[in-house]
Image (cartoon, rainbow, N blue to C red; front, side, top):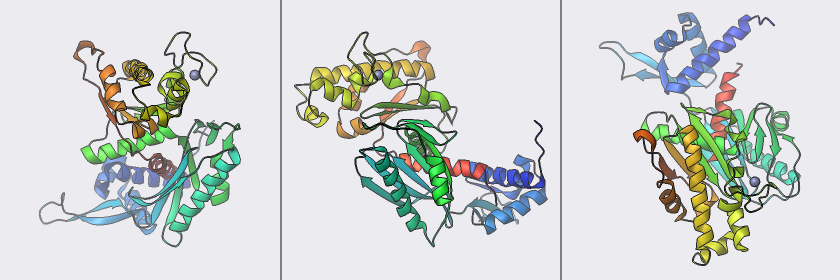
Length: 377
Ligand SMILES: [Zn+2]
C-alpha cells in the first residue's frame, strides 16, 4: 500500500521531530535543530513558534554558546503548562505521579490496598487517576497517561493480559478504558520496563551520560526482569520468564504448575511456602531458616549469572519487596554472584540495589515519549 503524505502529515512529523530533538538533548537552538533534522529554516521557526505558544517549549538566552558580540536563543522544555500522569497498578498498592513536561515530579499519591478482584483493581486505578486529574485542574494540560501494570501486558494494544490476583483475571484493555473516560492519550506497559526507564533516567541525570546496558530484576512475590541494550529497552524481554526458568531439576512445585522453577526457591512467596510461615516470620527467625534463605539467594545468583551471560549488562539493578525488607539479601546475592569468573577479562558487572524506583514515573516518561511521537497540534 502506498502512503501519501499530506501537508498535515508533514507538519505533524516535523513538529514531533523538533520536539523529540529538544527532549533528547534537554535544549537546542533553532540552528542546531535545522542542521540535525534537515528541515528548512521556515519549518523550524514556524513549528518552534507553535510549540512555544502551546506551552511545550520556552526560549532562553543562550549564554554558553553565544559567540562574541552575538546572543542566540536556546529552546528548552517548558515545565509549567503541560504534564503527564503515571500510575503504578499493583495488587498491593497503587501510586501515581504528576510529571511536568520537563520531567520533574509535581505531585505524588500513594494508596495502600489489596485488590481482591478485577473490578477493584480497575476501580482503584480510575479513582487514583481522578485524584491526579483533580490536582492538575486549572493548573496544567494533561498530555498523556502512562500505566505500569504487573503481570503480562500487550503494550501495542494497551491490554493487561494477566494480573496476579487469585480470583481470576480476564484481559482488560486499559488503554481503551482510560482514553474513553478521560479523552487523554494513554500508554500501558509492563512494570519492570517502566522501572528500568525511571532508573535509566535517574542515572543519566546523575552521571551525565545515558546508560547503555542495564538489567533490572524485581524480586517480590514473583520475579520480574527487564533489559536495556544500547540505551533501548528490549521490548520482548518480558516474554522471557526468568521466574519460571529451571532452578532445580524435578524440584519443588511452582505456582505455574511446573516443577523446580526459580520462583519456587527465590521469591518471597516461594521462600514463605518452603518455610511454612509468613516471610515476616522467616526474617524474624533467620537462623532457623538460614539454609532455605541461602539456597534461594544462591539459585537466584546462578540465574542472574546465566541472564548476564546472555545480555552482558554493565549493571544489574535489584529492586522489589525482598530488597526493601531484608538488608542482608543484596550482600548474600553478591557473594554467590561474584564466585563466577569473568571470561577473557570482560568488565565486571556491577550489582546494586535501589529501593526507590518509581514505576509510575517510568510510565509517565514512556507515555510522554509516545504522545510526542503522535503529537497533533
Ligand atoms: Zn513456575
